[in-house]
Image (cartoon, rainbow, N blue to C red; front, side, top):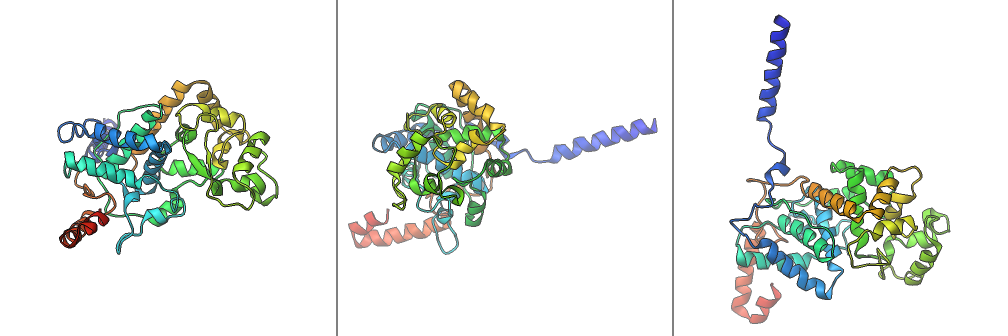
Length: 355
């Protein structure tokens, strides 16, 4: 009887302990978070993204990447949007981001439109999450119900951006490790890599594969030889690193499963792409084969992985803030607002330049 009593007391203790633990942050997010306070937010975001993509289809990939590069640093908190100030060391100058981030101006356009409809209500972090989902659907890819209710950070972390963001020359083990830190598994890795079914990359990120892979003086042996020559035509040896190559040489602006078919043909643009299929004995090979054969399976896994990624380290409740301007914390926004008033008093040109 005494032993049964001890077990019963222990079980009660377990119930009490787990009962007082806080819920995980993702449980506080909901697709209906703005249903009363800003019911048209998704439509507002979609309209801005759709209009921009008409003249710049590459922007759809850039907005998905922006959300990814935000979440992998200190969670999905819009820290990547913060500009350099006296108190902020911007993530935009981190090695994986510098001179490669696109879409910051588009996010500001969205924020302006949302603020006009619903002042001080929608976070920049939620705008990034919505823009990523809508970019996928506008590129004819999967859709999903975006959990909402994130708040914006008061800080950025450039050193963590340098540390956490995967590099285009990473091995499969390095990629897995980077994703595992974020609580993402191997299927998530392969599915999220599929975002490279759209978009472009600068030559500088893969040119070593074409001429001097791993300092061998030879091209990467995992590259299709015909594809190798096509890429060399775009990126001559010793040329500028700025020309762009499509991630998917077949349907570069359509979100489809061709990314995986390209890997099977040794046509992955980045080393980190091809590693998913060409690493001997890797468990990612079967996932690549599955997604190549079944676009629905890819779409479902991509949507699930995006939701999972979008829950990383989110701020909710009273944490963080709802920024008035996505590039600055609110105290800085107030200072800028006062400066704008002073400039507006002096000239119309000053007002325009301060926007």
